[in-house]
Length: 423
Image (cartoon, rainbow, N blue to C red):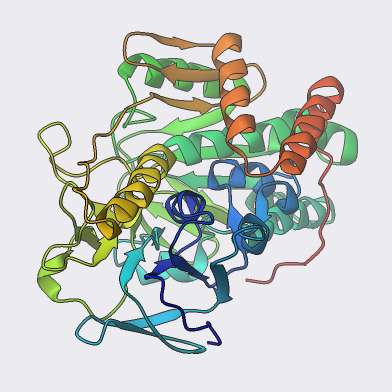
């Protein structure tokens, strides 16, 4: 892998997500050698993936080169590779480009889409966890508009203009609202030969309300916002089968659709090599203590979505969102420096800064510890928080410009089929 030999302790970080990036920053120009490994050469700001999917943003505005993050770190290195196995007894990992030894190993591989064992849905639906997947959804939506414009029958047109989103968590709710804005603002102008009333957005949720992780106040507000945008919400509804054209549910609801977007859940993305006892099988997450050490290992750690740190307040682990990953990454970086200096590590305590979701223009919901509100002010806070959380000044400027342009012109500027999608 061409990593130079060094007398410094070597810290290997697998994954350039929120946790991995914040760990790398914590080690900047310290007396450690850092090797960051990821199968992509960029960090993805996943909370805004849905805007790439719905033609609101280009992907380069929510992605940031990992090498650019470490360019001024003299003892930090990046390698583009897939980690295939961990050999803890040898303190070594096996990757697609070779072997590498480590003194400390941090697993920050995050999650992948969970289809709950349904192969038909996995084969025919559209996931949205990566930039390429978001671009595929964008292409499919725009291609469907083009095909609907030349459809020979009403049934065919209906299938192209029916969009089904499964999972009414923040991702599903935000994507539903964004596609509804395409229907309300873009379709009447770009596709004058199509009737916007023929386009339908269906949001399916297995629980009895949208945004189940958030408060009931947020759920009611969000459901009301979605209804005003024209989204049809179906609660207590599970998808049993999807063959690429027909959505079958646990109820009498049956939908003809060429597009089913799966946002119904995630599962951990572990790496082979550690003992089975270290992994919680149902969630595919590593069991870690309050210092993020994986059970049974003193020099192997897990952070972010792949880590399950049970506590009195969070018996099933912390929520799999950005803030726990960011906070764990920052603290573990400091803790490893303390460990190397033979100082005691500090236990992790999650500081819940609240949760939020946007449902379109001027519409969002925010849950803070003592306050719960929705509407324009919540939407403004959502924009500010997400804008400041982006990695890189350039990305913040581009996103702010796009949002301002979209807001003034009721437009989405990224309506390009760059890479046609084929099922």
